[in-house]
Length: 180
Image 1 (tube, rainbow, N blue to C red):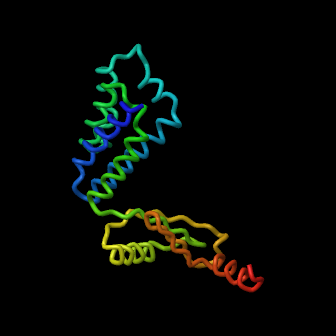
Image 2: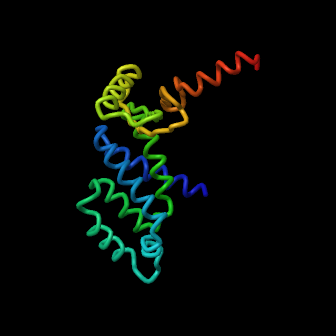
Image 3: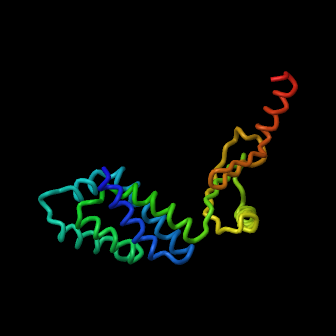
């Protein structure tokens, strides 16, 4: 187990070392997330990567040819090393560790915005820019909707939650009225 932690740290630090812009971070993060999701949903990929009948150099060549036009070069090289070392089982943990390291390195805040209805693109851009100005960080933002909020927003910035939803305001008013 300790050996896996060392490998995860080595892989994620190496990948983080190749990231020097927010755009490269987004590209690698998206690719890693997609590959991790694909490898958990598609048993064919897992079977191929775990197969003992195909040697690692063949796996690497097939993987390289399949993804060379899709993945960032640094990411592809790291994945090839992981295949060579039979470490693709660490992919999800490497992804998590990479995101944490890159966020620190590039001064990025992860933001989750939940609204009662879809926000148009202009509102999303304005909110993202305002949050960037407030936090003095680049914003890695995810938008979702939840009709139960009735109105307003819930904004989670890293570990802090700001809740201005009408649902929460009504629940707070109800609690004050009944004295709870």
